[in-house]
Amino acid sequence: MAVRLGSRSAAGRRLAADPFVDLLFNSLLGFVLLFFLAIVFLSPTEEDANVALDAEYVVTVSWPDNNPDDIDTWIEDPKGNVTWFRNKSAGLVHLDRDDRGMRNDTLELDGKTVVNPLNQEVAAIRGLVPGEYVVNLHYYESETRAPVEVSVRVARVNPVYRIVYYGRIILPEKGAERTAVRFTLASDGSVVNVNQLPKRIVRF
Image 1 (cartoon, one colour):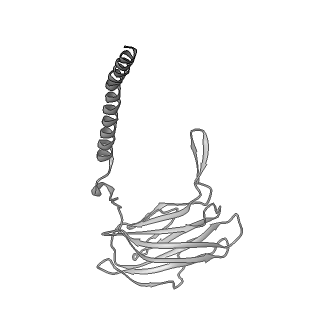
Image 2 (image 1 turned 60 degrees about the horizontal axis):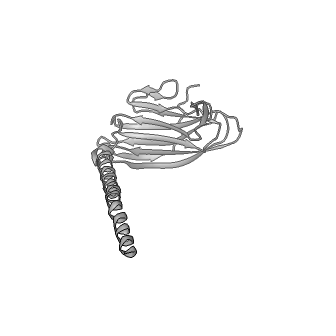
Image 3 (image 1 turned 135 degrees about the vertical axis):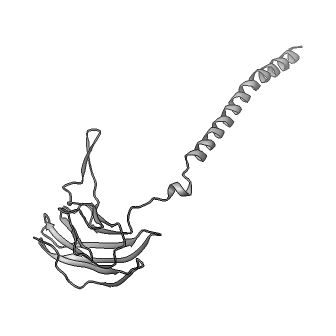
């Protein structure tokens, strides 16, 4: 009789536990379903993932991270308009980002100072005006009093992103001006006649 009572008691415990296990299992299934739906609705579509840039060509000038020296980008368009940090928009060329070394690379976030180590200037050519473009670099300010290696990239962004020029150049000292690249836009928007023939366009 004792054995039978024990068996009934164990069976009763199993019956009492089964609804709790079912509840946990159903809750887990619901959580997985909600997680799956969240992934589906939050994932960007292919159209959303494509970033539309308001430019035909982008010129990117970079120098070593955390370097405090100030390198400036100057661009002359086929009409003779010159874009630089005091004239950020000339013709269809616009200087989107003027980097001053470490001078404008600190931000205050939640009471803490955050330093952006990246040294990079970006200029956009927003239309296809045929003719020659000249990209010059100017060593504006120097804290290191040392030469700076600068990289220059010219990329076509419409209809697809494609690098048409990449090169490096050494600026030996403060005040130095060097022609990084000269290129000609043909009437169909393609790049021809890429060269580094020197031309001074810095106006001070």
